[in-house]
Image 1 (tube, rainbow, N blue to C red):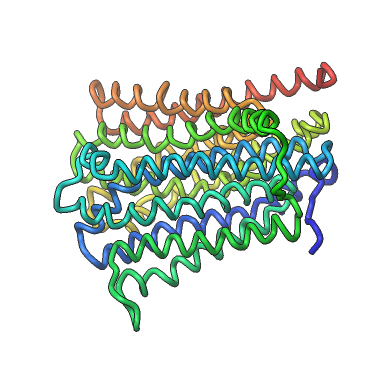
Image 2: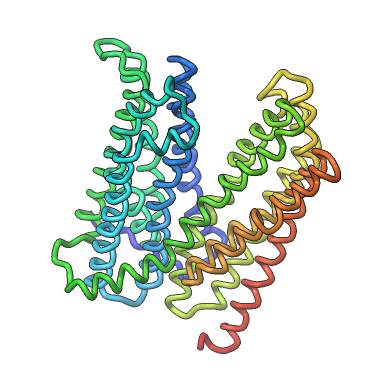
Length: 451
């Protein structure tokens, strides 16, 4: 098998970015279906089991953010180095990155296994639900050891300019999980009824399949792994480079769900229908912006390769392409919302008040989706050029600096509509700031000949 390296520092920019983006869309959709399948089949078992899954979600997200952060840090380092370093250095970086991911997650797994009961009691789990949580997490924690390899490994493959292979592996992993779920959870055919334990085992099987495929490509096709590591001092130096990006990136991943939880608490004062509607639009936004999210993942490696080769002018052009796409996609979503907000809301609920609130949110906030897309593209470019602090800072500003405090003020002095306008303003302001900040920084570097 020959390596599939793609040089992103030359050739038409827009077609290249689109070609790299669509496999990522499939992969991200696969991961969404992965989670929905677990939730659906557990919902067939019982309310207590479903509640247990709800309690595990924040912890699952934290561990996933750790692995994803290391993956982003690795992708940034590899993409900046792949155009200038020799194969031996790249092989060392990839191997040390996987070792770092394994070490970090292993520590978290051990701590997690020892603290299941006190942690989830502190989160509010009742004695009725706690046994189901223990059944799930005692398996899931050990399964995280097979999750870190595909999450970090796929980012290594992406850094070579190949997004198709990781996208397909993510999709295959999700399909395996969806197929196995009903057999292990509900006990179809000769399989025993395992309930929530079955969901954990299915997750491990699905992720394990992804791990095998990813490791095969890294070892056989790309030849990017080695067991011969340099002295500890050199390993620690590589880990420092990765963690410089990984720590802020992991924090950024966690900022959004945490702040959404706070806003949900603010919205709850307006009634259950408001909470239900806000839950609907939060999930709708995740689906609606998945294409821009995929493009953002591609921008890390595009920015890294061009930054590593000193092609700042080309990087600026690529960033502008990403911005125009984000604005165009956002305008399409805005038009759809203006024309069909109520029918769209009716798909998710038959409650008239939930439909009304959902439609009102879409009518107001949808215009700002293009600016939210600029933020998503911009923060990934910052990560790609080894500037993680602006990336984390912009994400924190949008949620904790603007959205949360504005939503709280609106809930006190205005009404639910004010909360929606808070989201609108947060997206618009951070989108403009992201573009201005990054464009000026890149143009300055371009004028100074990358000095």
